[in-house]
Length: 127
Image (cartoon, rainbow, N blue to C red; front, side):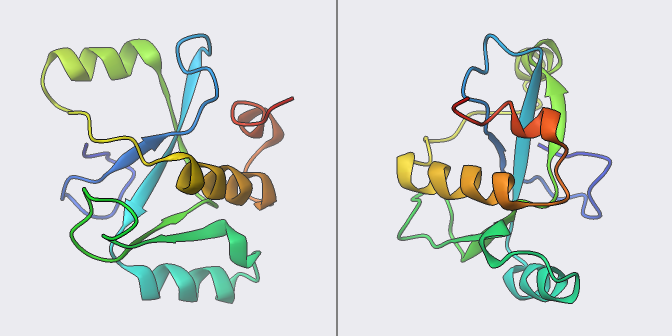
């Protein structure tokens, strides 16, 4: 999916993080980047917790062809209706599930980030 808020016009992998995506009004989306060094440097420069950048290799997730990462300090919100409309228009497509281990690392990163508002954290927390 391409999003106007991203600096690149290339399609990106967006990851739905909600515990209850069909029951929540908003979906919390994280985005994967192949610019691992830049994301690491940005996190370090801003003195953000290390667990807020989750690195994912092609051996961890078969749909990634290069080493990638997710910056859990930056997330996007989108309604389920909006995402469904994009699906119908074939603007987005589904990929294989990430798996529980990576998903839990992403949730841990979101919860550790001081940049993510509490109301957005509630979408991914167990409580």
